[in-house]
Image (cartoon, rainbow, N blue to C red; front, side):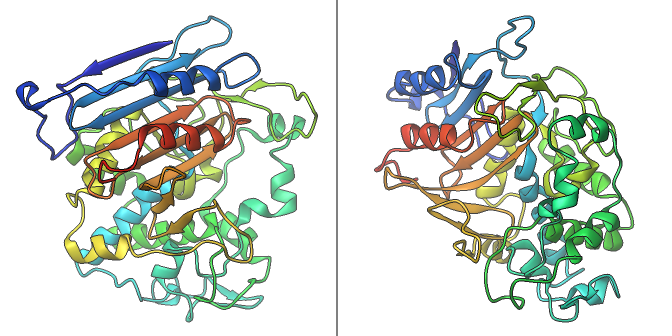
Length: 384
């Protein structure tokens, strides 16, 4: 296990706290114990946590980055962030709204004519806002039985380098009729974010990756964040990603799933990043440095997530972000996500002054690790 405390770190747009202003260094022993338990034999291969608050920055880890070499987890490692990507995509949409180039109540039909029609769908009745807060009613292509089967067990190895065009996956989602009329309920769906990203590309005239780089990565000086497209490898230093490939066995075999073409996740879950970069991004986002006040308010206006298919207990979903009411009585804000061999969580206080990012390089632990990490770190009375 490793841990490190520093008072020199800063989130973009937030001055570092002078050492003289720090009255006490938090005791992270309890948090380190959570990490040690998570990476104990039979648990996750490895886990990392980075925390930033008024006292500075703390990094802790347990387990390994590579089970073959025994290499420990490191602060600079890149990893696939899964649906945490949605916060980036939604930010791009809201920036365009702030510039007057689109309206959140614009319909899909206005920007993508004819793309959402038939089988119970009507793009004239679904808005961009409903895409971002998952109230569109559009089915998640990832839950299509035939598509999902390609990612289980041996089939994953056959299809790990397949390339999917956004339109192809949208068609898969639309092949299943909607469960409800637009705006009536919440249903988490990656298809929503593919449609939103196509609107970004239509308005900007470039790719989503270009918009991400120009509008977020470069301004915030994110050195390990990018959208890989069809590239199967992770550039630079990175942790290995270990997966059970959705096996239903009592003791499933674990596979190295690090290399794969994530065009199947793209705008909904394809970004690669680091704990440090996620701290910078969510710090800037929560503190209002990426969006004007009007769009900031829109992003953090939430809907109930119980829906026809209940989502994470204690959560409410905004536009690419969600709130999570913890057992400690504190509510944190941000996003989380999963993909093969990686679970990621990036949450913080609503004012962005207390942030936590975490990643587990195995996909069988689920959200339980993050629930324990967040509940341990965010205690009532610190204003979170």
